[in-house]
Amino acid sequence: MATLNEKPVRLLMHDMIASMGLTPGQPFTREQAVQWFAEHYPNVKQGTVAAHLVRLSTNVPTRLQYSARVDGSDDKFFKIDSSHFRLYEPGRDPTPISELTPTVEEPSEAMPEASEEFAYEHDLRDYLARNLHVIEPSLKLYTEEGITGVEFPVGGRYIDILAVDHAGSYVVIELKVSKGYDRVVGQLLRYVSWIKKNHAEPGQGVRGIIIAKQISEDLRLACSELPSISLYEYSLSVAVNRVALDSQ
Image 1 (cartoon, rainbow, N blue to C red):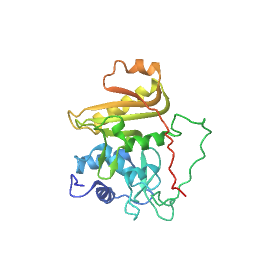
Image 2 (image 1 turned 180 degrees about the vertical axis):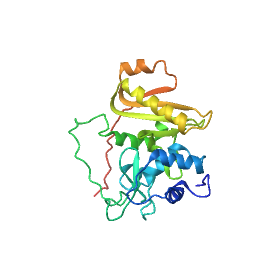
Image 3 (image 1 turned 45 degrees about the vertical axis):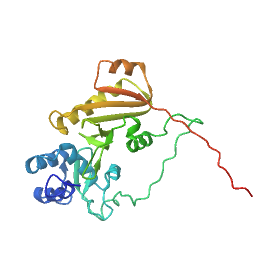
Image 4 (image 1 turned 60 degrees about the horizontal axis):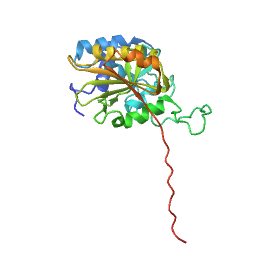
């Protein structure tokens, strides 16, 4: 994929380390990284900087959504808290999370038979990220230099899915596996405003979508005066087809 600068952002992060004179154990903030890029590469968006900090942080599970390289070249940072990072220190820090890291599924809570809900929000998120056409035929997952719109970082929080529509507008998608209540509106509007302010180009549209198993009446009412917010309900179905056997 073509890059905006002479190097992809993941490699510009290496230059940032040298330029800022970072040493082992020295913390730095997300804001400092954003400011460094604003001064040296102002065409790199704030959301892109935040996403690459996640991609290069060895202890953040979300880096798996951004295709962190298994050869170790993306193992640069260790996330201290929601806004502080330091250099990754091999031998001191845990083994970097990667596609090669064994994962253990947490035991699920008992679900009623023939449940019509996804067991976990990330299951719904991953399904829709691969099948955005079921929401709108032209909807595409946001991608840029290995960063995707799955769990896209916005000011220390994460958008479930960031997509782009046929007109090039951003679509912020918030998911609820069960019932959606009116309080989700504030969360979605915060994300939409962040994308408008920090990631969208001037004049580029940004709108929101809430998807839940059931949309509550208070959520319908809360969104009735918000034309930039759409509501969707999902449903699951299972089909069973008999398999023909060869005659003996």
